[in-house]
Length: 210
Ligand SMILES: Nc1ncnc2c1ncn2[C@@H]1O[C@H](COP(=O)(O)OP(=O)(O)O)[C@@H](O)[C@H]1O
Ligand SMILES: [Mg+2]
Image (cartoon, rainbow, N blue to C red; front, side, top):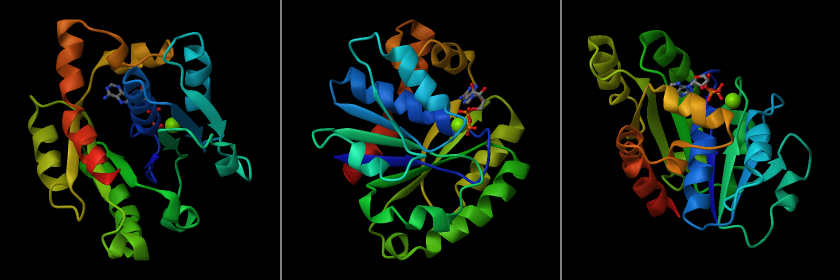
């Protein structure tokens, strides 16, 4: 069972977008997929509810409730955990032994990078991460590759203490598909396919963590 947590101290950096897209990706690959929502705002849970009619539904688990880990079916192949803003590395420490990988979305702006740095430093101090037993990967999200600001921020992200495992572009496709309980992997226009390719590196990196 691959358990991936999507976490950042920052709100609005794309945690729920990445968690739902990854869950859809695995479900479409035929994996029994659970999306555990630890955010009281419930974006991921609502997305699962919208997707419930599809053959590739994702099972929602309310991870704001105590004992939620016990409600994950033992035959689940993939568990994606979406977390709220304001999470601290110390909150993650409680369930850290269960995780296969942590994905941290980062927006490509200096202000966002500064806000994320302290969180990354805290993560780096957690013993399992420090020993190199739990991989942490950064995802640059909402990038605009044609802008200097975005390029500059990506260069800054590469200097952070964890590897950059994907660079996702800013596109309304994520917004539109999420609202339908879907993802860019449920749709196959040429443009959307080019955005799907942005995920290849992340998926390969997660496979290695499995
Ligand atoms: N790559 C992207 N391109 C365009 N919009 C995005 C992208 N990623 C996230 N968004 C949008 O940004 C907003 C915040 O994303 P969300 O996933 O809800 O962040 P979080 O869960 O970290 O608060 C949402 O409106 C979402 O649709
Ligand atoms: Mg969210």
